[in-house]
Amino acid sequence: MPHINVDENLPGIRSLMAFSPDTATPMGELANLLLRSNDGLAMADRELIATHVSYLNDCFYCQHSHGAIAVCYLDGNTELVDQVKMDYPHAAISDKLKALLSIAGSVQRGGKFVTEAQVNAAKALGATDKDIHDTVLIAAAFCMFNRYVDGLASNTPTDLSTYPLRAKQIAQNGYGNHIFSNMQPVQ
Image (cartoon, rainbow, N blue to C red; front, side):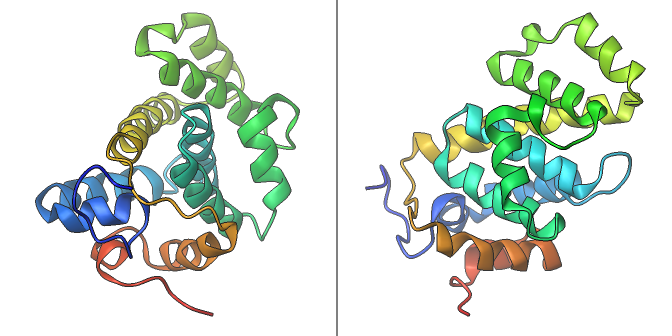
């Protein structure tokens, strides 16, 4: 049960954004800036970073929401997304993304856990300063988003079949008011 009075028909962060449209707008803009760009990192990589950090933070809603969006970008490869969440060093992803996920995991623990060795390793594998910047900012933002969702005990669907429809909508249209103002799409 949510800690505040929100629309329980809207799951996760969507109910919180509907509760506070003034904060929802900049948060949606930030999500679009961080996750809907192919400048450097691909959108799939960005969603994988968000998914992995959300998994580390044990945020059920965010890890499954963003995992489902990553699946959209990865042509339905759910197994890869699950492996990146739980065991990215052995996932079939680039070594560069593995190095960036290592950095993201350090950010999740605390910003000062990121080491120069991690950054140098990522750069040696082809990561640009922008890739590293965006990885750190995505990881930091998702620590905030995860804590927002879980800190207010937002309604979190445990039925995993509910996530792909919204994920497809986000993959096609991006983050914005349609996320929290529209009911869950149906098949």
